[in-house]
Length: 202
Image (cartoon, rainbow, N blue to C red; front, side, top):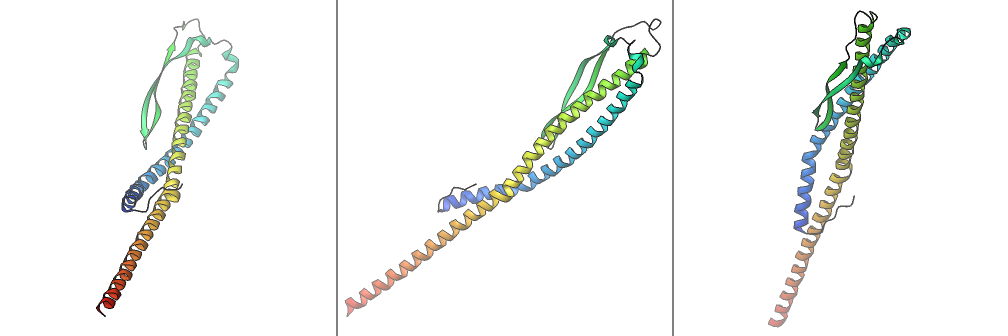
């Protein structure tokens, strides 16, 4: 990224201001990046744990597979999913607060004894599956934010800060050279004037 500047004091001051802003901001962005990195790691572990839990519940479901043919699946359904929002290192992520299930009334006498266990198993299965989806959505958001933050850290560290420092060096050198030239030309003019004065006196 080429930094636009002019060889004058105003440009020098503006660049110094921009450089200082980036130098002050860099540690904050780095902290955000490491917080997001840790959160992503934690989220991945949680997602894996939920994946395992879901797998176990599916296996328990499959163990009773022969019985499920008798089960009336319309007895239970997800009525509502309550969401919340949580901020993690400045990133808004969805939060699963609660799941409401609607269980249709059924006859305890006519239905098989295992129906209540079946309803409980399906509730757990649905809860874990929904929780896993939320965890994956959260993971995607955090991963995206972490990548963006890492890009910003790299931009500041590797491009902008060195770019501003280089531009400031160029302006300072130019201004020093200009000052030296000005002093030199003044000396030359002074010596010319003195020579003229001497010649006039003679």
